[in-house]
Image (cartoon, rainbow, N blue to C red; front, top):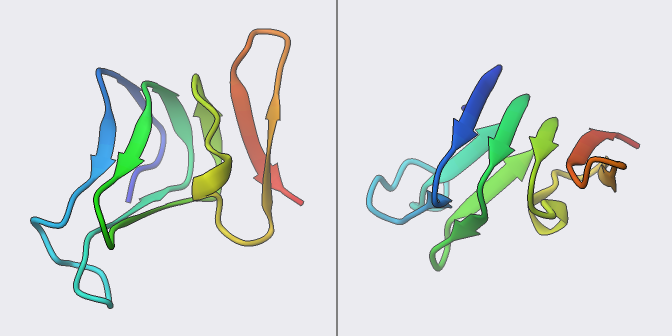
Length: 81
């Protein structure tokens, strides 16, 4: 679970090596923060976003009931619908 962090790197990825999710695969929960990197997952893993600001479009990782809007600064902000 990530909250109130700033992440700048090559990639933030949920991979299957930790097997911590209920389905046996890893899950990254992002609740807030700034992420200046692409997001990705390996097969079976997930990223669940309920808040934060992103340099790449986070739409495919949004939790149900959340939306991403691109601002004038080209950053995507996630908010509840």
